[in-house]
Structures are given as C-alpha cells and as structure tokens.
View 1: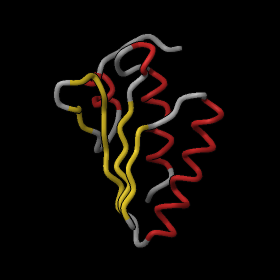
View 2: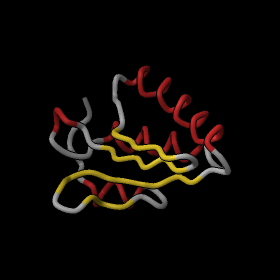
View 3: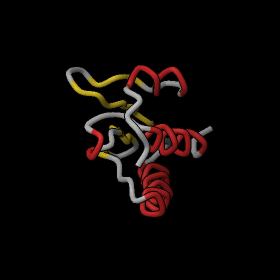
Length: 93
C-alpha cells in the first residue's frame, strides 16, 4: 500500500479532480456521449482496479460516472488513488 499523501497533494498532480468535503478523498465526474460509452469506461476501470486490488467508489446514471477515490486502509488519499485517477483520465479524450 502506498503511504497517505492527502487530497491536496493528489489534486496538484491531477487535472479536474477535486477534494471531497469533510473527508480525505478526491472526486471527479466524467460525462460521456451515452450509456454505452460510460459503461465501457467503467469496464476498463474495473479491470485496472482488479489488477491493482484498489477499487473506486462510483455512481453511474446514463452517461455520467461520478468517481470518488480514497484508500480505506490509509484513511485517506495515497499514491494508489493518484495512479488509478491518472489511468481513468487516459481513457477519456
């Protein structure tokens, strides 16, 4: 497990991510053309998350996927969250 770096440090390394109020976590909302593209994104992320043994909190409605990342064992944001967030960002134009 990566050591805790905190949301502020993670946000400085990532584009479009925000802190979660009253919690050491980061979040981002992705909007796609349709449900099929949103689901394809989630499938790719799920495969990477399984490889990393690090799973996002997420919510999907039609073409929107809201993602929250934090490392539960560290009780906050770690390098694993940054790695998964950066991977997600590579999947969208």
